Length: 299
Image 1 (cartoon, rainbow, N blue to C red):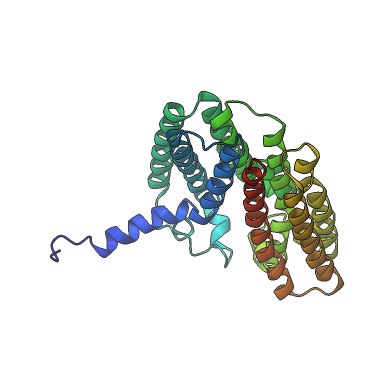
Image 2 (spheres, helix red, strand yellow):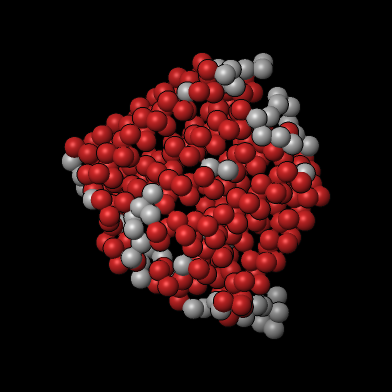
């Protein structure tokens, strides 16, 4: 390729900025849990068009939602070290650019979902990410320290979306997947908020460590990890999974409880970071084992 054919650094940087505002790591987690939801509907592998189209459509609508979230929180992000590098916070992308980009992703994602899955999946996905981009971002996050608890409903929806894409309904197993992520979200996010407390104080957001202090926050983290442990074992009780999953879920959950208990006994930012990192490992491992158990139980 000659120098004339190579994209300019400015063009490459612009495309990277658009990529960043879709929060690709969070989008990837949403797609991963959606994919697990698809596979858990039945023993066999769902139709490839449904799986591929569902994952692409959910990813596009999630990206649109996160882009709008970045736009609406640009001023807050600019005050926090964790987020001040985002293109929206630095003004490298204008309001018009982000809105047009988000609309484009939303329209294409909607078309993909409607044509490859079903209207229920599209409606649930649209409602989920509209709720995150606007209700959570504009109302919950700046007005209540329970923002992450209530707003966690949006983050817990992806496996339900995946289930709906294949089954065209929302039944008890899908709701259990929702409950697992819903209970997981508060201790996961509050661990981050604890070691980033100074950032959140500058932001003006009423995060729980800022409004109620460290001890109160960690106590609630501990309560939620116990709730998560109980909820994670419910798939065994309804025969959605077998003993193998139950044993691993118990071990993973007790480890989570222990790490938060240690954090309560002797706090440090390093331990809080450790809890945050383990929470990511926990969720990925739990869903992977749930999927493996689902298929192995049919052998």
